[in-house]
Image (tube, rainbow, N blue to C red; front, side, top):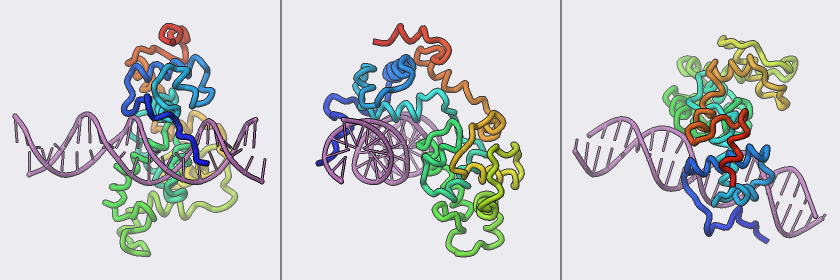
Amino acid sequence: MGRQPCCDKLGVKRGPWTAEEDKKLINFILTNGGHCCWRAVPKLAGLLRCGKSCRLRWTNYLRPDLKRGLLSEAEEKLVIDLHAKLGNRWSKIASKLPGRTDNEIKNHWNTHIKKKLIKMGIDPVTHEPLGQKAASPDVASATSQSNITSESNLEPEGQANSSPPESSTNASSHDQLVNWLLEDELPEIDDSWLNFAVNGDDFSSDWLLDYQSIGIEDPLFDGSILESSSN
DNA sequence: AAAGCCTTCAACCGCAGGTTG
DNA sequence: CCAACCTGCGGTTGAAGGCTT
């Protein structure tokens, strides 16, 4: 019995990725239109990494659709609401936030949001006021954005819109948005939602700049650069 | 100036669940 | 049906940089 280790630990590099390794991985995935199977990727791409490490590097850092930088207020709010409903299911939460990874959200939760909530007197695990069962008026007001909105508006039926709610910052629209996000089957995300969710930030430029910084100009629109460095 | 402490986050680890032969 | 394999997930770690004393 026993599961094979994900990779032969001997001769496998660990630790931070170098620009050269990033370049190799990006080149490989983009030239091949994706990955065939992650276990084979390092060998085919000429990397001394295990497949798991390649997958993580790609999904958490190199993927072209990633949005970089701190979470916006709207995104943070959504994370809190979704966490209240879903718990530590980071991948589920991440799937509702375009361009964000589970790792990113998990880190942000642990380093920022958790502290914020504690400071506000909210238990980050239960989303209840710290040290008491029922919310006192003071604490309740502090929790109103995350706790109350998501609890009071999740009616089982009648709100299952197939399209995202209007972009808005008021509470009820936010509730609708959370309801919509909690639907299992999500429709394609359209531009208006994207703009709302990422708070109007430029969604595309950061990763591109990173590619450029390691010597790749525009992986999606210029396939010619791929041949030059792939081995 | 520098030593120690704190914070952040990329990366790793081990397990679970799904798929395949 | 079962074992082997693959991928994805969530928890944890540790290096690096920032901050405080």
